[in-house]
Amino acid sequence: MHHLETFRRYLLPCPVVPAPMCGYSDRPFRDLLRSMGARLVYTEMISSEAMARGDPKTWQLMDFRGEEPPVAVQIFGSRPDVLAESARIAVHAGADAIDLNCGCPARKVVRADCGAALLDDPKRLAAICRAVRRAVDVPLTIKVRWVEDDARTLTISRLCEAEGIDAVALHARTRKQGYSGTARWEWIARLKETVSIPVIGNGDVATADDFFRMRRETGCDGVMVGRGVVGNPWLVGEILERLDSPDAAREPGGEPSPSERLRLLRLHARLMYKYRGPHGLVEFRKHCVGYLKGLPGARAARPELMQSTTLEQIDEILVRHFSQIES
Image (cartoon, helix red, strand yellow):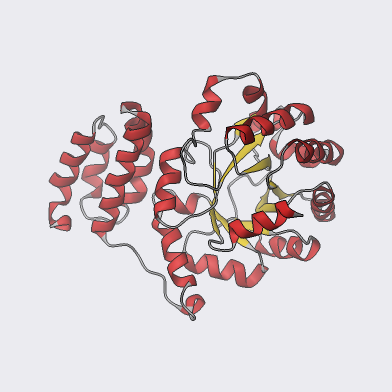
């Protein structure tokens, strides 16, 4: 029970939770989101098999030494004993929570009987929850998708709750949908009515208005935002600012100023370089489009930024194309 209360305390000051996203939820992005006010952050998903055999790449993905807590490590796999061992490794390294990925629809993940494939094997999923719960003394959560057989989704969630899971995040799409179509928020509401542990809604939250509408329509305890914060990390800060207002749900949404967009672009680039060196600036390119969205001059600057390899080049490009905005 104390794990459940600990997790509730993680959500209470900041019910907007950045989602674990492959290729995005790295240390620089987590630091940036914390500067916007995020509290609970997740690593991208890490293979339990790779972690258990000591693959050095897993330590790059799990780089949270000296990071402000709480940090949840998301793991995926299919073998209960290996998942339990990888969870122990993560907690020993300093993880404040463990999240089991039971919703990834990627073909190579599903083919390995991991991710969303676990929803087709409730007995295995229950054994995984049981093994990991016994292995670690921190909050344990799962992230799932909706199963086409509606009743089975709710049954699986109750089963995981009985095995000691402290919260469930539901991406309100099916495995077949992937990331297409529309998220069905009514499924989040049904899950909230079914379990007593915290429910975190996920899917199609791109604005602060979406956040408040999901909370109002589903009663969820928290809202997980994925693609909505890519190139748009100030969304977390906007939501928190409006939460502090008595009329938060009725206030109009706001957009950051062009100069604020450019400030965060520069800050994010510097964090990428700090943790990853020159290669970090190559990885940073995928974030640039979001920061430049809607800015006059973005079309001309974008291809140049896609070729930049140093912080000096990035600064020079921004000054040349956006000096009027920043003056």
